Image 1 (tube, rainbow, N blue to C red):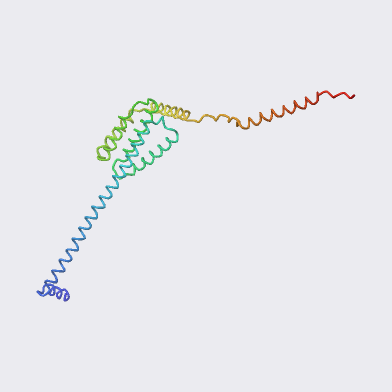
Image 2: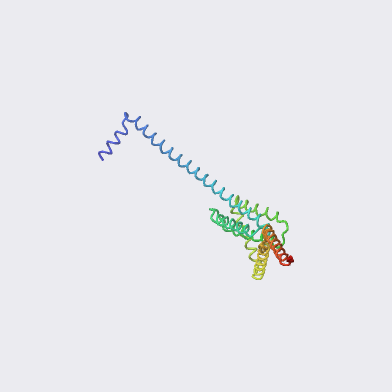
Amino acid sequence: MQWWNSFVSWLTAASNQSMVFSAVVLIVSIVVASLLAAVISRGAIKRLLAQNDRALKAAVIGTLVDAATEASVWNSLTPQEQVMADRAVGQADVQLRLLPIKGSGVAANWAAHQLAELKRTSATFGYQLEPALLEFRDRLVEWQDKPGRTRKIFQSDLDRWKVSKNSTEKNLLAEQDAWTAQQHHDQFTAAPAAPVPAPLQYASGTASASTETQRLLDDVQALEVRPTPLQS
């Protein structure tokens, strides 16, 4: 208790008031500055993360929209182009599902269904799909801006599609897709290569050799049949 009384006496002494006031002001300033720095840093980090997430979402949506454009002309793509497009769609699907947004899996399922429908429609009917592409793009952009409300719409569409398609229809669609893929494969299968004709120079050389041989044979035959002169 003695040291505490001594400290209180020193703290309340009139000669030490200016020193105590300066120390209190310094401590309060340090605390306030630390709090402000923490708040500013937290806000900057949140803005940076939000900007990064928005850029990632924009990249994923751009890839899916580009995939939808290729799906609308799927039957005119070569097999190599189709493989590259499927790989890009697979990467975009994984990135979409890993986004830190509520309902990203539902959005990925909805986008996968729409891409499959665009492929099937392009391969079988081939009519103008621009309205479907615009709707696909607008729905994804709306999901990016308002993920909560759009997630409910996506889930409602998925439930409606699940109920409307029975097992028989699914089997018919699978057979139709297999037939379309086979037709597309046969269309782009390379024709067997034609036999390569002999070089013209080689053929000319052969003909010249044959002519020379025939001329020599004719000369030999003429020598054999030439009459021998009579001796006197």
